[in-house]
Length: 181
View 1: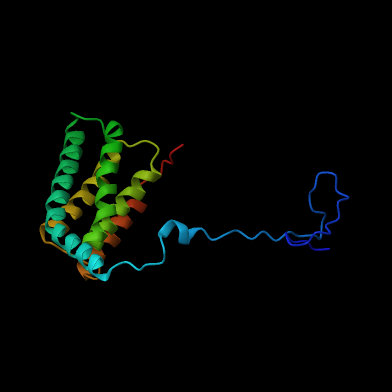
View 2 (view 1 turned 90 degrees about the horizontal axis):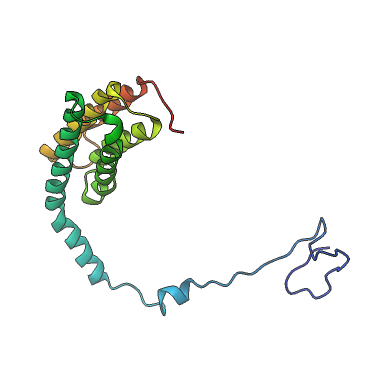
């Protein structure tokens, strides 16, 4: 016997009110999206154009911000290499910077930048504990990010850029994985 909310003659032999094997219940969930989004008016195309223009206007600023972030990451890695900072203590700062660059890169047309930063984030995610062995991998990613920004390489169809991403990925795969617990 199948049942739906519209059926009134459901077999009540199950004391817990649960459906017996072979029965089913159809639940109709109301669509509340319209109530949340308004009366059905469309977004004004002029507002979309204005938002796109604002994003384009921020692209140059993004490049400057990203260059500053990458320089900060380079400094952290250099200080770790010199021994004045411990890489294990700086993991979150390095991750946060690369994650921010990754998240914003594509928005401003720097998809290659996003790929490199994503590769670094994935590497950091796979490591339980960073140590000095990992510094060359992080430094290579930082230099790639810096070069992409310095030469203003947008998009990801650049053959040299694709080779850089492939090489960085290969570098990561050669590192011993120490999973996070």
